[in-house]
Amino acid sequence: MPDDARHFYDEMADDYHLIFADWQASVERQGAALDQLIRSLMPAERYPLSVLDCACGIRTQAIGLAKQGGYIVRATDLSAREVERARHEATNAGVSITFGVADMRSLSHSVEGNFDVVLAYDNAIPHLLTDEELDEAARQLFAVTRPEGVLLASTRDYDQLLEERPTMTSERVIDSPQGRRVAFQVWDWQEEEYVVTQFILMLHPADGWSMKTYTTRYRALRRSTLRSALERAGFHEVRWLMPEEAGFYQPVVVARA
Image: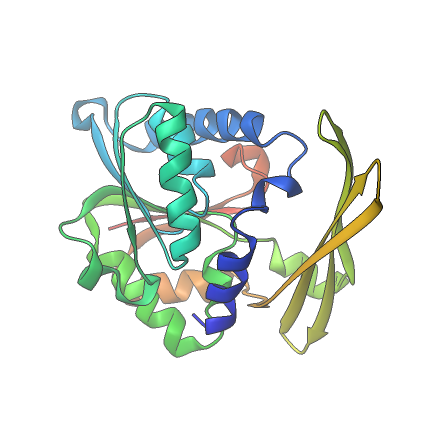
């Protein structure tokens, strides 16, 4: 995972929630959807389940799932700043989560043991720009997944996006008690990679508009490419669930260890 991804999330840690219309509501909604999906995949006698969220960000899925009950959650991320904020948010939410800083390409060296469920949501894996990085991450994900456990990872729908090649996405005008803000992304395509610039504009009653920007690079990772990497790493029963099946806004790959 390139250094620009680490820098992107370190810099954006304090503002990440601003791209959501209601981040707290999203935490609750995603936690409930994850709980429903996991319960459809794992037998009741295995509960409570150990969960590793290895791309936890500022904690959207980790805290949402911990609030559901029945899960012992560990959360890691490449970004130390995001982990610091996630730890603070978990304390405020009153849930118990163990946090740490870890690179997806070396998880087994940073995280002890293995887990019933491993999560990598919100398009984290496409930060891996080469086949070698992807294969190493897949091997590490397999190494920390307990036998008969599951990996759940989400990506953007790149099979469709590679046809459309949008240049602007995720436009939102959000009115909140703190004021009006506008969030959108500009995408600059380079073959099957693209550079994302996240814009956040905020209206200050006394001073007018201010703007922040954050930039990173992604690989437009086709579903078949990720599936093959997971199978090479040892996962089986690899299948994709589209948003209407997974209850999540991105396609989710399910893989059994």
